[in-house]
Length: 323
Length: 252
Image 1 (cartoon, rainbow over the protein chains, first blue to last red):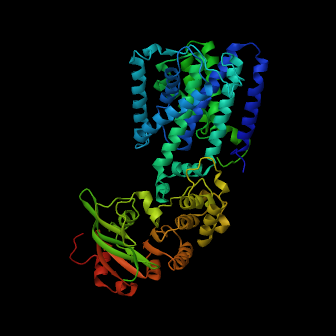
Image 2 (image 1 turned 120 degrees about the vertical axis):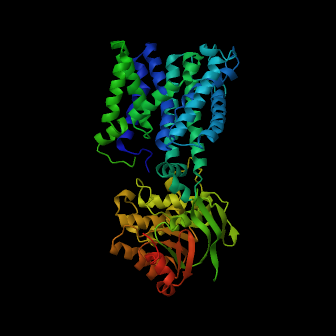
Image 3 (image 1 turned 60 degrees about the horizontal axis):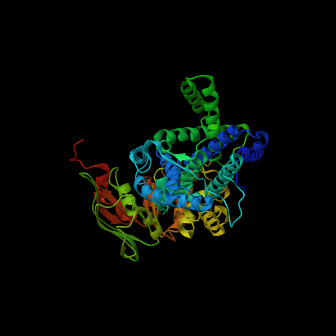
């Protein structure tokens, strides 16, 4: 059984990662574009984790950016200020701690669903936002700086220098690939089978003997700690964290990107992030009323492409797929 | 009554002031088809939903194989061995018929928390699912999407999914609802076969089917147990005729 759900997904993933691998060769020295691409790839990881949550498990959250921000804060607070720490070890810490926080938050928010879950996730995210925005210890509105970037050695061997933009870009690309592969594996797993079922019909899944709360909780923890990982990468790229990372409009924008890409398609998250950020960048340079045009374009896109770009590509390739 | 498997004692379910089930006592025996009939609003569906744990009982006890299961959570009823089908077709439309049964079978086999094992590699799940489809006569439809099979076949699939969970008791809520005569005949012969192996509690409006299939019948009126007897005795009982047709004193 193929890991891909349809032909267009397969083609897109091959094309994207091959182009992604070679594009720095053509942008030699142009650190602006390399950085821009890294940022969008980090965003794509974040959007992918949200897409899994909303599109695959049917849990709609407006507080996902909370974990994005927490990922950055956890690293900055934990790591010693003037000493390079190991990237991989701190990846583990960040994901473990954010996963634990997600477990606690999940125990609360997953008791609700639908509009109530949207409200309660939003409320919790805003609480966290104001906690960091008002805290003197964590830098208030200005946030915290990361003075020394981590080193990436494994058993004394180091391949990546995070100060180098191209190296950092490859780290992001690898992370996106791993993230995509991880989601595809769990979607095709026995666990994924139950998640598919409870998304379509939670009552029936319960009647078949599944405690759907447990499955939702696991999905929530997984998606949240991956969002935290994306926030961690973002913090490393820019060398600071601030409460703005967890403001609610980041969650909402990510939701728009997931929608544009095609909810639940996972790879659509990559398309959604690139299209959104690409349009944003392009229109921003044309006019200062970019938000007006951006908004109109999004409305048109969402109305014309009901299943997002992923659905559109699938129709183009004439494949039925099994979604 | 011989070998009672499921039993309700003084079972009550109130919706605010409405007494949907009022002090109901009823016993279901193994390997029998016990149907529950009554006019609309008599509480038949509420009884099924309470027996399968979907609605928690207001008071009273549900005994399964002699043990109280009243306080189990909704999902634990299925694990105990009480399977139910739904009045409205309640299947996973996007999945194939086989996959629908796999979802049911996986609960019993386990491994549902395995994030990394590919779902199609567990052969025992597929085997159970296939045999459940075969039991209801849908083996030819295994790879067809559930949304694409006929309405009658969806109702059969509904039963197959329950069978795949390996129940001892089948609670069937109007399995023949909305079916034509020929489709009903398929379900009737299916139920005749199934009642040799399972305790079946049937709620059904198709009276011909009920009379043909039932070993025992219970008539319910206004949330209360009116009478439980064999088909022959029920047919000629004046109380039942009153319940269905109304007696002369009633003001309309």
